[in-house]
Length: 421
Image (tube, rainbow, N blue to C red; front, side, top):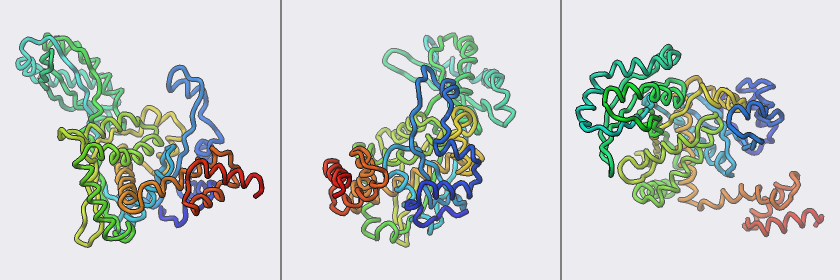
């Protein structure tokens, strides 16, 4: 399969679906869910969250041109924001000729935190916890024999003493290998189950017992080289590196810089049925671990003058459990990506984040961020103006030609066409 399809964005929705269906072997049922012809049942929706009254549809697009670890990939992205899918596809094309993206993962380790208060001798209590380490781990693993049978489970613990304004806290970190699950349910269950034992060992009082979304032992890394020619030339490449240095040095710029990274990441996380809030929280916390909020990406210039980018961030995603198994569109998305493990999914998501950042920095360093974004946003404005579907492309083309993408001008063009002028 090749993900390099010239003019993919110019094809009709039906033609794009036909290509993806043929390449990834989607069934009629899977296609019906993706197309929206068959909606998720209200019974399933009611089982997923509480107080259900309806559903909201988010467009799912395909980012093309991705080669990840030597394998061509179609990447489903669920987002309401124009230009996100196009940006990722364009940047992936610039990396394709240079070998695409290469990824690595630090593992599938999550942390569960157990907060213990009211301890007179916290250092002695810390030592007692380590004396009972195996007992604690064994109790944790009793609660999830299925995870243990797949080679996962609680494998270690850390004990931290944290002084605060009012307490000297003892905080125990359960180190749990969650394998192909995101792991929140497993880790939280273990932490709650072992809490009485912790109280008995330390003589303290356990309060919080919950997973940490700063998954610093579940890092996803991706790197790629982007052709200088495809990115716009030597000056644009130099400007991109300068823009990165700005973001790495200034938190005001870094916030928007990293938002661009997360445009791509959150779209794939959502499409695969994973927890966007957990991934976003982990990413932004990781950007701050130095004590100052910084860029999640790094950009350099190679000896050949091409653009080299890399990214590293926590990526707590799974392919089993939760919406990844219950939501039919999430299942279809994983099939389209040809995903067989949580680590593979994490690598793909990191690659998309890097591509999205490359595209954002290129636009920012060349023609400005609004040109491409507003051209795509103009379609939304045409819909707001009441345009018929058959007229949208004509309306947008005229607005782009006039370089006037304001809503009032698009409304005028729409009304003029509707009057037959």
